[in-house]
Image 1 (tube, rainbow, N blue to C red):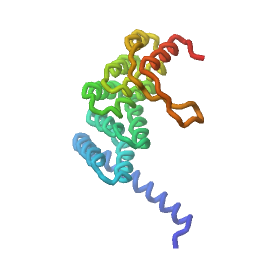
Image 2 (tube, helix red, strand yellow):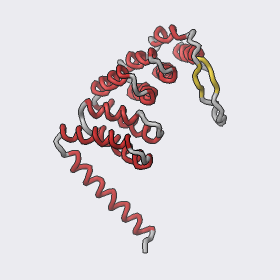
Image 3 (cartoon, helix red, strand yellow):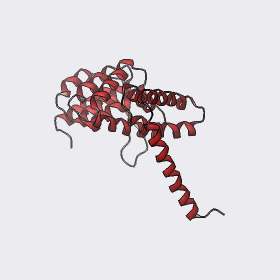
Image 4 (cartoon, rainbow, N blue to C red):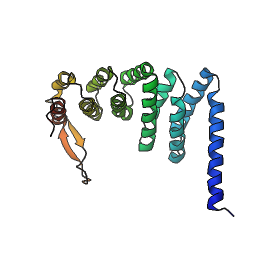
Amino acid sequence: MTTPSSTLAAIFEAERALRTAERALLATEPSALRSLLSAAVAEAKALEDRRESILRLERLSDLCAQVDGPEMVDALVSILDDEAPSVRVAAAEALVDVGFERYAELARGIERAIADGARNTALQELPWVLVEIAEPSARQLIVRLLKNDDVEVVASAVEALAELGDPAAIADLEPLLDDERPVALDGDEGDDDEGEATLGDLVEESIAALHGEDD
């Protein structure tokens, strides 16, 4: 008969087994390990079973962050480009960890993602990864997303620049003041409704924040 005590013991045993297996995996020859993890990410993203896909992608986020190499940053960006919030959180946190330890590697990976321009969900999240790390080059990387064709990607970059707080971004934002493309705005706290404004409205608010004019 299974009891709460035996269930807890099973959890501890599973955790020990997981840590042992992870140490063994990370001891694999680096090139072979990068290939293995990259293939595992592609396989997980292709699964029809979303619960299994999410489970694998969340675990792979942690594993990829522990392995050096541009392939692992690319794999994390691929994971970040997922519709499941929990997967995006796991990938974003992993990318932040990579950025704090190997920022140049992360920055080059973000440059590749921006140049590719094919993963709009990831491109909406990457500005916030850069804001979290707040390296001096963050503004220049985020500014590149202001020219993206997807208005939600641009809106994310605008808001991230305001959060970054570098007044030099004002000059980057000003050309978008007259942009009339609609963007969705989150409702006020306690209000589930979303409002709609133009990108220019959002830019105006962000410029005001960078001028220190927020309430």
